[in-house]
Image (cartoon, rainbow, N blue to C red; front, side, top):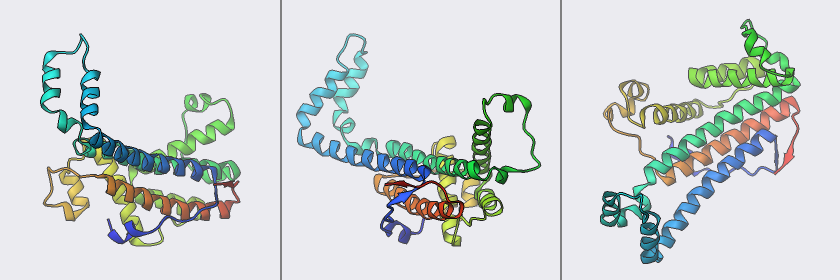
Length: 254
């Protein structure tokens, strides 16, 4: 990740598509969750004795094995330290952030398709049972667009880029660096979901800077995840502005 990209301020947006509105809400929830956790950590430190008693009380019931109580008592300071949970929490927030990007692409494509359905035209065929599952043409079009984006996200960034170029006439990535960054973020998400962040030989082949880290784990912290949210926000805001203008999509005030 290029560190300069992490220093960019957030773009000021006053109106956007409905797809971007929902994307922004996802980013805001992630950021507020991080803030909530940081506030909680400070309050726990400030009210340490009360926090310990409260935590013990949660597990103080007849169904709780004594070994759990003993572990809690011996490790209670660790369990009340936010650092104990940071990697786990940040992994979940990170995956949610990349999924938020994927969902934006699905939804903005659906918005475009509702105005210009011919962009989905291709030589591909759909099974009859898949078609009959949907009650209306609108539902079917939305399902096909969702299916297409899901396929694209698992094929790779080149396929996503090619689809938007050939079907929408939109260049998603204005620079090689932007493309490399988003590609890495998506691949990191897949590694997190499917291999618990453990760096495989295949992953290291794709990113040579990790060739000496095979078997180790990607490390996520709150600062990194927050910087990713900012980068994704600015990336999507620019795309949304371009797509909404080209296809004259409905705008909402933010």
